[in-house]
Image (tube, rainbow, N blue to C red; front, side):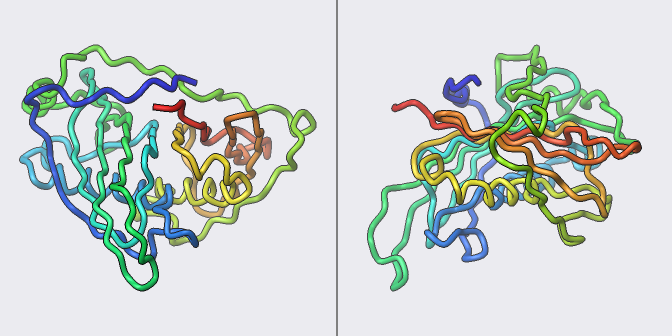
Length: 269
């Protein structure tokens, strides 16, 4: 998997900025900001960003194909997170939207020790779709605005995770069922992006050596998951990487890959 740093913002490029408070519902038992909470921040800043423009009418529908989360310095509670969002690359139907999360940490009686400022770099591959869910051309006005933020105007899709799951008898870890709740789904019966990463947080409990150092989490969405479907997690642990395939039954009851996840230690520096 590519471990190159995510591209920085173009000099002078415009960006959208908003601040959020870290809440206790966002953190794990070590007060670390969880990956699913990061996903919720990314959804919130995307919604806040488009509502702050005139494009909520011309380009209202977007779906995420992939999210990359680089935890450089962990964010923990209590803190205020500043989210900066800009376009890192684009084509006529999709974009790589970068979000930088920085945090100034506070102290309280539960977490009294000073901590260095947090830094999480993210990038999401967003596809513009019409009201039938089909990829659609970005409006000329929005395309002009996004194009001004980046010099990369020929974005192409390239998978970062292995999309084919190994057979169950080829891996040492047994399959695990992850139970979904009806609250994990939005009004359009789409599984919330954060719900996928809740399953990943369940896995990281068994791999603290990955979560306790700078790491990159990559999730790629391949098939929709609908209410009433259970997820089977197939896991492979390599030296510095955890791979997870999220499997769901197809119409014939055969397991197919709905999403792929990798969590990898980042190289020093």
